[in-house]
Amino acid sequence: MSLIRLAVCVLAICGATAFAAADSAAVKEAENLLKLTNLEQVFNDAIEQSLDLQVQQNPALVPYKNTMRNFFSKYMSYKSLKPDLIKIYTNNFTAAELKEMNVFYSTAVGKKMARVAPKLMAESMTLGSKKVQEHLPELQQMIMEEAAKQQR
Image 1: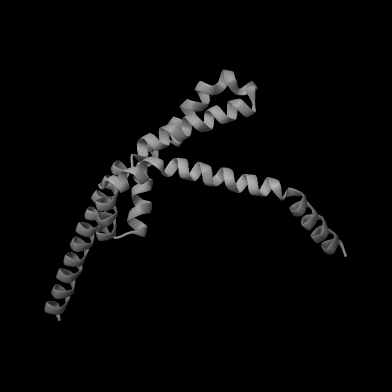
Image 2 (image 1 turned 90 degrees about the vertical axis):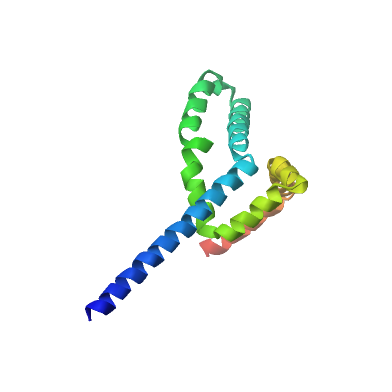
């Protein structure tokens, strides 16, 4: 019986070691992916763009821009979120999958994708916002009709 227990313990330790090694490989690949996609610069740019937009929309915030920047840098910076980002990637992709992504982002097209992805996202969000604005009266009418139905 003790031989079986020993075998189970050895298998458990080997399994845990293999999982840790795989996890370590995934972490390494995720870190490389974050570097290849220049995520630190993307985060820095996003913080600055967000601050500029908020100040533009509400000029009363101008005196607080540096305070807001410090807050965002503390809680929303790449450095502060990096461990969580790595966890997100390693929870959703295997080390092999992350490695394949790294191969892609090492190519000229992959580098271009990493460089233009924030622009694509911004343009997509602007497009979506424009479409909603164009059809806002229709949405408002639909909401009013639904509200009337709910009151019955």
